[in-house]
Amino acid sequence: MATPIRFIHSVFHLFLIIPLILNDAVHCKTLKQDVKALNEIKASLGWRVVYAWVGDDPCGDGDLPPWSGVTCSIVGGSDYRVVTELEVYAVSIVGPFPLSVTNLVDLTRMDLHNNKLTGPIPSQIGRLKHLKILNLRWNKLQDAIPPEIGELKQLTHLWELANLPELRSLLLHENRLIGRIPPELGTLSNLRHLDVGNNHLVGTIRELIRIEGCFPSLRNLYFNNNYLTGGVPSQLANLTNLEILYLSYNKMSGVIPFGLSHATIDLLVRLLIDIVLMYLDHNQFSGRIPDTFYKHPFLKEMYIEGNSFRSGVKPIGDHKVLELSDSEFLF
Image 1 (cartoon, rainbow, N blue to C red):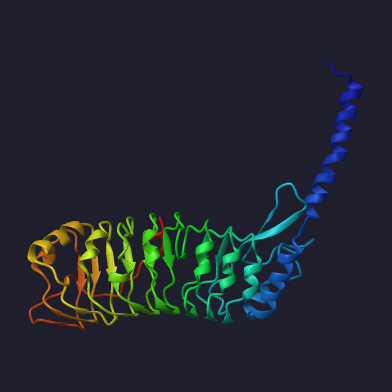
Image 2 (image 1 turned 90 degrees about the horizontal axis):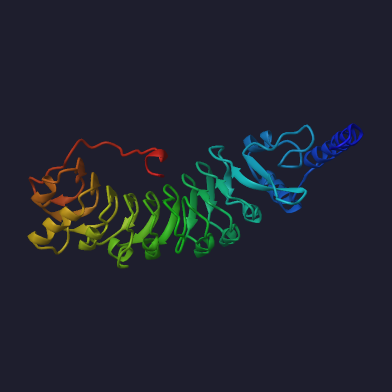
């Protein structure tokens, strides 16, 4: 049994150690690379962000708190901190995508949505190997989507090009992206929500869904307000979990669906058993809508105005602006 003297000595020793441990935590320094990157971003951003970013250390220093929208973590087994989350949204940031962001290599979350970022998404974004959430919607980004995003293997929400098996939602609507939508997206087995509406994208749906077994989990497909051409192909029947198809305001044409017999149309409708909302308005479709669609058990809304359908073709439901909150499709 320990003697009282030994016990008192152990307690005294513990009280000496604890302040040293706490002192190390308080004086933990931020990785210089991250400090440099955030200060470069600070110098280029609007006054609303700069006003909330006080001091030189984005993770906080002494009595100064961490910068607003910046989250830091202590690296295990070390005496320094790194920036792991950057959330600077809806503050009217104007100008090109801040390249210094790509030097924050420990980021797991980056949210820059609802600003006025312009220019391309830089190819250097492929450096962010730990990134899980990337939100760039409601900006004015331009040019083609860089394939380097495909290197973000841990991404679970928002954007990728190929081989990101955990990605569930890709949201890049309301930018100025150009080019074709890569068919490699179809290999994402967990992708449920794809929204690239309100861009300058071209191509056809047939090109996008040409890979056998593509989009096995896709529920919501938003292509509205782009420059897509071609028709609605029979291969659409392969997307058996599809609930929302939003094709409004493109340059698509032909009959609905294109080149199918009555028996095949019946099969198509049976395969698309979960479809609830279908937006075909303001394209160049013609002909008539098969009666089978009007007998669909779950189809609540089908908008068709602004096309060249035969007289007598009627919509389903009352036309209104389609708006879904993030919580309705992310999980």
